[in-house]
Image 1 (cartoon, helix red, strand yellow):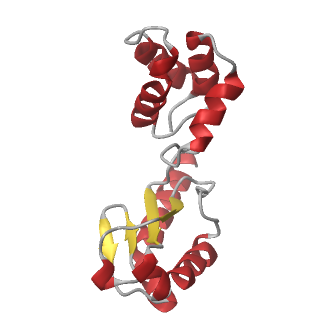
Image 2 (cartoon, rainbow, N blue to C red):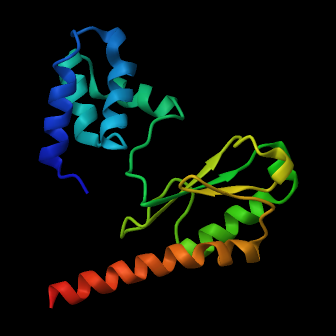
Length: 170
């Protein structure tokens, strides 16, 4: 995970490529998120200071657009399609099963950074509905039982990594 100091350095580098014009707000937000993976609160403050606009205005723009995130994504970013086909085929049940299995809600990242959960409008796999995606792997025709099954290798890897960290700290 990136430190606050490292994030500030990245933001400062990005700001160095832009002119202090309000029209650069969205491109700045996009580039910061691309580099950091999300928009930390401090980055929003630094952008506001750079553009000489109120921080609340930067926050307002960032929260208006669905593309911006305010928490880092987990190692295993998980998306559930809620497009029409997936919704009608039980997408909500898949989402609920993931929330139960991961112990997080939509838009959250697990405290250990292992999983994050997102609801998306459409993945483009309507014939395979309902669909979930973990990282770049598509899981078609999901059921709540299949959710539990699909998570097994990811949870095992997280457990193995945690065990390695524990053994190194001893």
